[in-house]
Image (cartoon, rainbow, N blue to C red; front, side, top):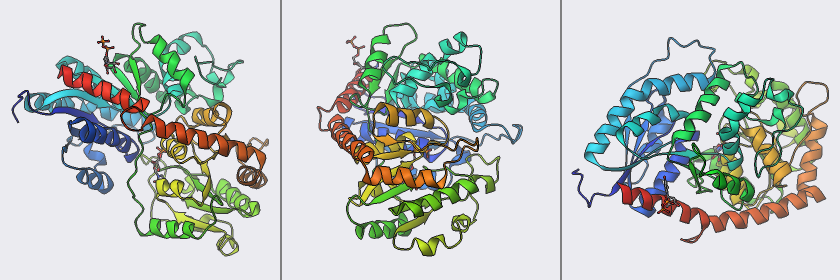
Amino acid sequence: MERGSRAPPHVAVMPSPGMGHLIPLSELAKLLVLRHGFTATFIVFSDFSDNAQTAFLDSLPSGFSYVVLPPLPLDDVPPDAHVETRLSIMVERSVPHVRDVLRSLRRTTRLAAYVIDLFCVETLPVAKELGVPHYLLFTTSFMVLSLLLHLPALDQATSCEYRDLPEPVVLPGCVPLRGEDLVHPMQDRTDDAYRCMLNIARRIREVDGILVNSFVDLEPAAYAALKEAEPEVGRPNVHAIGPVIHRGSHGGAKGKECLRWLDEQPPGSVLFVSFGSRGTLSTEQIQELAWGLEASGRQFLWVVRCPSDRVASGAFFHLQGPDDPLRYLPEGFLERTRGAGLLVPLWAPQVEVLAHAATGGFLTHCGWNSLLESFVHGVPMIAWPLYAEQRTNAVMIADGLGVALRPKTAADGSGLVRREEVAEVARELMEREAGRKAREKAGELKQAAAQAVAGRDGSSCKALAEVAQYWKDNA
Ligand code: UDP
Ligand code: UDP
């Protein structure tokens, strides 16, 4: 295509490996293509162009194309290196290839912007060098963004591990955070993962702007504080463009079965239990959770996985083998809970489940996409954070927003949530006063989320339209 003035503006999008990154970036790209007249190219890692990813990319409507990078072997990286470390090495190695792709797109399209997610920051200098506006899609909250932007200063000012800080960390406009609730890679400052994180924190200051998958009414004070700081050197503009959630179904036959089961349950009666796309529990925790759900007497729909202590470590994303997750449940559990509970191995059509009238609560690992989906559908939660920034998110939804309850872990140092506590918190959410309040709050957030993306006037629609216009005007 000639770079004529009538060519549509084009956006190059680079997600880091994994559907969890591809989905939010592709939802953003869909908005740019379908509403703002852009065309888009995805730049993806071949090492992860598995069937799911390829099928997903192939299913995108016209206006999209994708380029698969050549393989980037990691044979020389120690097999026990952290996910973050492996990821950052891979992205570093991709830089010359990304340069080639961007150069070629600049020749053949009206390239208006380059959009990445957090783990692709190492490729930013290429866009800078080629004079292409470069933006980050931040796929969690303003609170976590604020934490990341503060990290270099916090690092300078702190000599101990953050979890040993006597006082909570107070980010402007955010609920105070105890050191142990800071994001997972901040829990060990001697670790590679922490260094990667610090590098990312420094690097994100180089972007031209940050599109945040959150909305102003969800975090008004955190958003206002970041906006206020924009004139400071090294503070990129922030734009609230969410909630951008994946609405397509990906449930298959199993998915249909669980939606049919929900059809038979009374409104608001079912507790949905799910730990995201890759969350796993220990064998003992699975058992405690099972006993607790049974004892609660509540209806439940549980996406079950094999326990983490049985999954081969070293796998990039703890990919599961052919093992049957149901065999780790307590003896007789399936028979005893028949009718009251439905177990779905590995994957459920979560968005449809949350949208279903029978779903009255969500026990969640607090991944940001899960939380947004829950806000959109007005479902109150039980916060059960596992990794990444999930503990920070849990503090936000439980202490900040009051839309979730938080089970207590056992005082015996095991880190387990015991069966009695599971039963208690499930009943609390589904039948008692604390649950009623969380439900009310969830209803308010549902409205606010809908308003943010309503028509042309929703705050998030406007923000994205402004950014898109700016890109077009400057392409
Ligand atoms: N998801 C799903 N079915 C499942 C588990 C997860 O559809 O059984 C989807 C969920 O709706 C969400 C995404 O996978 O869109 C998980 O993203 P999140 O940010 O919550 O957690 P992550 O998997 O990245 O830890
Ligand atoms: N904008 C952007 N990235 C930038 C600068 C601006 O996305 O690096 C968008 C942003 O939404 C902003 C709008 O364009 O609200 C207008 O930009 P700016 O305030 O820089 O324009 P001016 O007020 O100088 O005309």
